[in-house]
Structure formats: C-alpha cells, structure tokens
Length: 108
Length: 120
Image (tube, rainbow over all chains, first blue to last red; front, side):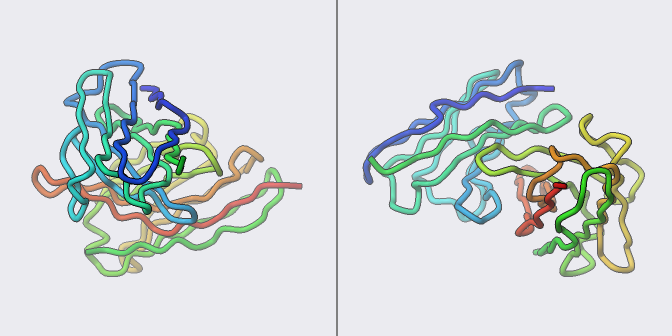
C-alpha cells in the first residue's frame, strides 16, 4: 500500500497569498495518478486536480498541481476566503487507492 | 450526471451488524463502479471497498476483509454495504463514491455520507 504524507499539517496565510502544499508518496505513483481534493466542513471532498496537474471541471485556474514520481505539489495562487479549508492528496495508480492525512489552510 | 445518496447509518454496539445503502439518481448509476470511502473527524479519507459495474469484481481494504460485503441491485439502482462484527474503529462517516473517467477526463460523484457509530 502506498502511503501519502502531506506537509505541512497546517498552513497559516493571508488572503491573496500563495499556498504551496506538499504530498510525498512512499513509492513511485504509477503514471503520476495523483489527485487533490478540497473539503469544507460537513461536506464531501471535492475533486480539484487529477493526473497530478489537470484541473477538474469547473475548478478555478488559481488551483494548479505539479510533480512526478513521489513528490507532488498543490499550489493555490491568490487565496480567496473560501479556500481556507482542508486539502487531501490521493493516489489512484496502485490498488488500494490511498489518501494523505491532509493540510489545513487557515487564516493568519 | 449521477447523484448518489447514502442511508442506513446509525448507532450500533460492538459485534453487531449494519447495512448501508447507496442509491443512484438514475439508471446511469448502474454503468459505474462504485466505492465506499470512510472518514473520521480530522483524518484523511480511507477507501473501504469497491464493486465493478457488472459486479464481477469486488475488492476490500484489509481492515474490513471478511467482515464487510458489497453488492448491488440493478433494479433499484442501489449498492449495499453489509457490515458484520462491527468494531469501535469502524466508527466513521461512510461516503458512497463513483470514481470515473471519460476518456482522459476524470470525475467523481460523492454522496453526503452517512454516520456509523460503534459504541457500547
């Protein structure tokens, strides 16, 4: 099973700033099949990025993903008030699919 | 587009059983593989089990293998998760999820979740 480690656990930033979230895998993720999710309190996770760098339908272009192999990054350029929530990475290249422990983006 | 709605959660004692349902909003639901993912507060989601569109293939997380069973009823556009020998560590919100792709475009459909609490 591929373990995903997200860092930092909490990121304290101000609106308008850039957020950089990291996700490291315990082994290479096949075909860079990494997704990023946003989760607001009381809601299901929402798909933001798949295939490491492709934005899902309807996702604003301030969200971008990058990386390959074992190191992946979610960047949010210009934080909006609604972006201060929790983010998870997921790998779906190898069964079982697994999720990271999350990064909370909070207002500084 | 397909919407999914979970039901059947509740409070049970350790060792008891519970059946969760995931109902699709239209027959398109039956053409997708369906998964259950669970989550406890403050933790990342955990994949639990999946069933293929034609029910030929099922898979389970090691933590639930032998205790949980997934099945589907095509006439009801519904997937079931039968849970036996429940443990305190099974306490979580259970989400029904369709992880799918159309060509190279990936999309998900998630339900709102149903809470399962295992406690004496």
